[in-house]
Amino acid sequence: MKSQPSEPGPESVSRDPVAAGAGTEPPPRPLRALTAPVRGRLTVAVGLQAVAALAGVVPFIAVSEIADRLTATAPADGDDLWPPVVLACAAGLVALVCGTAAGALAHVADNDLQLALRRRLARHIGRLPLGRLTERGTGEVKQAVQDDVSALHTLFAHTLLDVVAVLTAPALALGYLFTVDWRLALVGVVPLALGVFLFGRAMAGAATQMAEF
Image 1 (cartoon, rainbow, N blue to C red):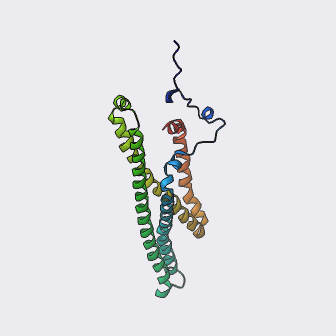
Image 2 (image 1 turned 30 degrees about the horizontal axis):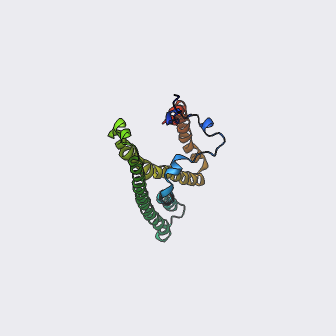
């Protein structure tokens, strides 16, 4: 008696993304699908962090303006110095408030996302045969439900905002430097360009490992 052909398991499915996706629409990006429930709050947090980073540069620009007015041919009096002082204080307050709000909102979004993911995983595990859990052990369940989900905290609650701050603040500072002295601004770009070049060279052989990771 011939045995019935079994359904292909996950191991038998082709891992070739071209073959697997032929004739079908491309799958959604994993992180985009993962963050769908909290994407709005993360977007607001990113915007607040960008405002905080930009506002954090303003006090330095104000100090530069004060120095220019004090060292001018006709030194400014006290009344002329108050506007940049007030601007620096207001910008510092805006940076503090927006940065704190961005961090708090990102952490709340991360907490809600982790709760939703753990509930989804718990429902999925509850539908699995008991033999599956016996074969794999409880360590795999803990790894998926607790450790892997907790690892997302750094990405969404910290790294996302840090990247925004790292990109926006130097952009404003560099733009201001070009208005002061474009030649010195170009000199300031040299270390950045050299760092990007060297980092690209150092990571040239890591593309395969990063894709696998």
